[in-house]
Length: 74
Image (tube, rainbow, N blue to C red):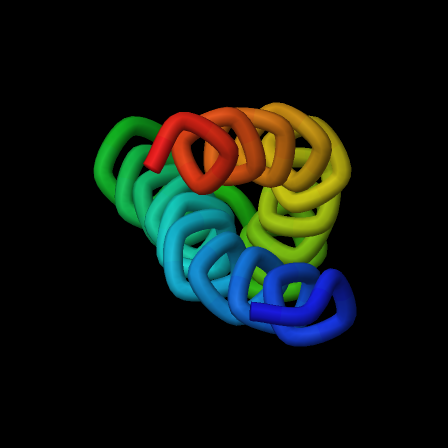
């Protein structure tokens, strides 16, 4: 495989991993905020978006490096 094709495959595989992680974290936050407190809807949705965005920022480089390492070893 060419280097460019490998990079595209790594990016595709990584996205299939880190996007569900961040969506799951956001939904978990929404569930926790809905069940444990009496927060307004705007606060719950804002917090969900914030947690989802932050978990995307944090998980993206970690997942990409792990997938690259796995692709190199194969």
